[in-house]
Amino acid sequence: MKPTEALHEAGQSLWLDDITREMLDEGTLAQAIAELSVTGLTSNPSIFDHAITHSDKYDAGIQALAERGYSGEALFFELALEDLGRAAELFLPVHRATAGTDGWVSLEVSPLLAYKTGQTIAEAIRLSRRAHRENLFVKIPGTEQGLPAIEEAVFAGVAVNVTLLFSPEQYRAAANAYMSGLERRIADGLAPDVRSVASVFISRWDRAVSEKVPENLRNSLGIAVARLAYRSYRDLLESDRWQRLANHGATAQRLLFASTSVKDPKAPDTLYVAALAAPNTINTMPRATLDAFAGHGKLGALLPRDGGDASAVIEAHRGFGIDIGQLAGQLQAEGAKAFTTSWEDLLQAINTKARALAREDGKAG
Image (cartoon, rainbow, N blue to C red; front, side, top):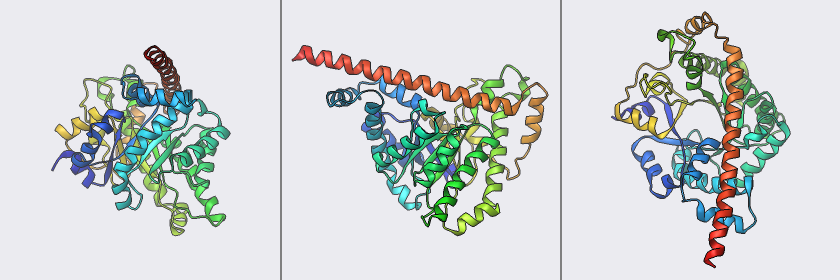
């Protein structure tokens, strides 16, 4: 049994944190589904920035859309929805076989809206309706301003992937927003079966503290945070509040581990995949990490229900001046800023390509 298959059999979904038109055209995504137990896919502005700027596969689409009057964000979303629509079709069999639990793809709202509640709500609803896919999540950041947008989007029936979560506290806030949206649907006589995942980012913790802690603590903070988030996840599923929602037919928001590629070259390249296995959770990983785990990964013990030694690891970090709460807020702000930078680069690259292609077409004519 391949390591990826063993992980899937342990109850964790393996999602690919990547998408390119080459993957779709050349069949590599279909191959990953067939051979590596991949059952979903996530995307973000950085992924699309790299995909579009490093390929000519999008040129014809950019040119055609530009000729129809599309530009900037509108043009990008047309390209992204085409790619994600094709990916969604590939995952549709597993989506239906798992009654909607698995087989999802994700599209992020504009990062420029990370701190704009009203505009995020409107954009999430628009993108969900525009995509018209039963297995597409709209990604909304779990910022302070994003939380009411999550509640409103869920109330409106939008499937939401809550992104940019870094701590158990941020995860719980996102879960509360999700449940509030469901409770409002039930109060209004609406079906509560609106799906969601909550994405907790892991590796950026260790990168942030790598120069501040001794060797024996390096690459341990992200896993400790993940363990505490998992404990919170299990606590929530056993809570009276969730049990009441489940009694009305609601389906639990699943915990997703994101940013699971290893940043430290001295650490094992499968560190965060091997350490974060747990049933009814998701691990989304870039292709290099997926291939590494498929090639030489080993499935260890599942995440402990009680968090294991996570609290002790975090206390050890506090001993070196690491303020976990402050750092979580900093990482979330930095993540939002990084996505904004990628977004701006992406839109500039698209518009530059559109102008260049128009000039070439003019010369040819």
